[in-house]
Amino acid sequence: MLNMNDQTVNNDLSAPDELLSPLLDYLARRLRAEAEADLHPFGLKIRHVVALTVLRDLGERAQSQMSEALGMDATGIVALLNDLESQNLIERRRAVQDRRRHNVVITGAGCRRLAEVEHTVAGLERRMFGLSGQETTALYQLLQKATAAAAGGPEEPVAGEDCAR
Amino acid sequence: MLNMNDQTVNNDLSAPDELLSPLLDYLARRLRAEAEADLHPFGLKIRHVVALTVLRDLGERAQSQMSEALGMDATGIVALLNDLESQNLIERRRAVQDRRRHNVVITGAGCRRLAEVEHTVAGLERRMFGLSGQETTALYQLLQKATAAAAGGPEEPVAGEDCAR
DNA sequence: TATTGTTATACTCTATAACTATA
DNA sequence: TATAGTTATAGAGTATAACAATA
Image: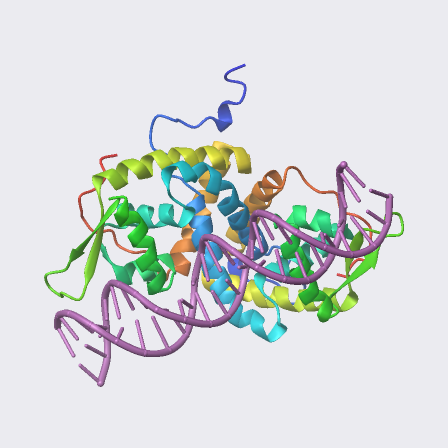
């Protein structure tokens, strides 16, 4: 039972010198600062991009579900969605099954804006991180696995008016 | 000339679907929130860990250099170092060559505290990200390469009273 | 005059608590 | 009574501007 999972065992006696957190914290901070200039013409910030990405990839979601998916407090979601809705990038719809709920969907304009922004951000990442295509792919896959684990398992996408891609 | 660097060429016509920024933003936000509880007994936050790590790995640094290395405004460094100095984890020393400058070094107590914290953070990362040892190593190396590039080339370490490791 | 570090201040991001409406 | 969303408010985190000491 003890050695079931040998692959994941770290040696706890020596100081771990492969700590991800400092690097993640640094990169995210730098990213937010750098992206601000690039994203300003779009009237968006990184976390708006995160929210739009979730809505495109996962489909229609209640605000409470978005709060969970984004790892943000529900109250922060309100302001975030207000920003996006004022630009018609998302829509809030009263759920008929439960009229307390607002279901949130990305609009066609939101899909288009997101695609534009993604090109901008991809360019920024290339400039900033200087990774090859292979390295970027490898890093993406590892980060996505970590994200899925941190979010407590993968979310299943829901059919919606998908962005034509 | 156009295809010199084929490995790094992305197809700019299709929407890039391997964007790192949303994942980095999400993971860093979750990390800060989760680490708060674990690090509270140490009186530290993630960015303190980042600062201590830089001081241990890079050695003595002026505050202006720390500002650059951490990607933070110089004014933020002051408060950050005040926190650490009040716990005797770092020291500020007037530089004799240029008495305007404060050189910052990590203390023995800082080294010990950092080692303890690193174990705590490593445990948090294992719980949260659920990656194997190999994946963690791979992710670490990619993040470090990206960090070095974002910081504008690797910094050369400076000899100092190194933490006995 | 320019630079290092500091203080005071404001702005942004996120979290806590109280309120509305539905269930 | 409990839940989804909202508002108001406070608390971190970070940046901007003005100041002191030194170059």
